[in-house]
Length: 173
Length: 288
Image (cartoon, rainbow over all chains, first blue to last red; front, side, top):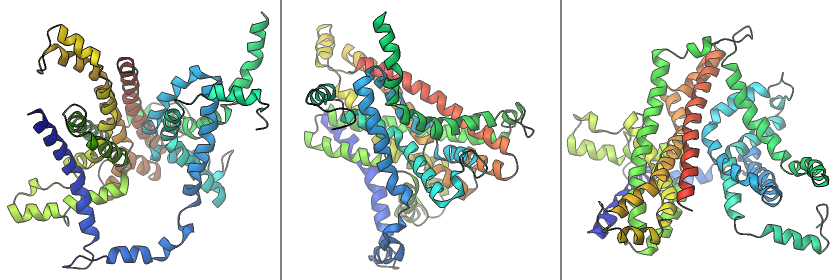
């Protein structure tokens, strides 16, 4: 009986996941009236926008790298030198839900417009940089716990000490 | 004395390592949010005022907040129930172990499925052109329109949000179910518990999981509030939504009201966040 209920719960939940995906697939194949076809896919793949790599904004492409550059050294440093602060980072994962994108964009436009002390929106490059910072901010709650889980089991203090005793320093590897 | 002097000297250097992160968070997360909070209490002449906050006390704006909270609440609650059922089935229900890994992997992907693609999936399924709607019309005719689930209405939104709420619950509760210690069960059985749901073991399990449930529910509540789909949907449908009203307020010459609306959203999310963090701390104490 326990197994019956378990399978029922599992199948009910799975159905909920599968149906929208099936509906979406069916819709995407129904471009030509009356028959299923790959016309929509052919048109999407053949469009000039999808073939152009630069169609993906540079701010999108660079924000993961910037996020890693920002979070990884910080996580390393906190774990090595400030382990007591590590617990606080777990609270930061909820930042994503407290900072809605629209609120952040609203604040950015007000703070970094052309008449502000840091006029990032005054040029295309500045706007791209601001967008990159925005994406990074929204991704922080994913970056920080991800980094924390990834480094939970490595012995970085031991490895750092070993590297330093072999002559490595903060300025040279 | 010497060691105290040393620690005083090394303290700034220690903080130097996290300075870039702190500066970034300050400039691009805290300052924009603070700007909105301050703006909510600033009048057109720049002076302090409560007029913007008082301006929120209108029927349409309060209704907009209420709709948002109601959808968040129900989608979190139903998501918790179904997600818990699925996670329990896989962890405690005696299902094949091979099911566990695909379910968790899929949950990791589906919990991030949001925004326009999610809206499109449900519109394509239960919207007017979708097979769900076609089936309802075929079976019941055009008469029972109330049977139709439209993605832009409250119950349709709840249904749509469940697509990521259920996986989120699975991801949160599975480690908690794994963390139920065998010793607890043995201790409960020694005290007379049986395998039945009314036993002491069940009560022990409920206590251990209660905090995790609260945490999951509030995380889902927050997750739903952070989703972008609703703002886009509301903009398209011209329905009452705090985010859209915020933009309108700004555009239509009342930036103070726009700030106040955004401040209201921050307050609601902040309260839910505080409860989430408290529940997270409590559940981590129980289930390490």
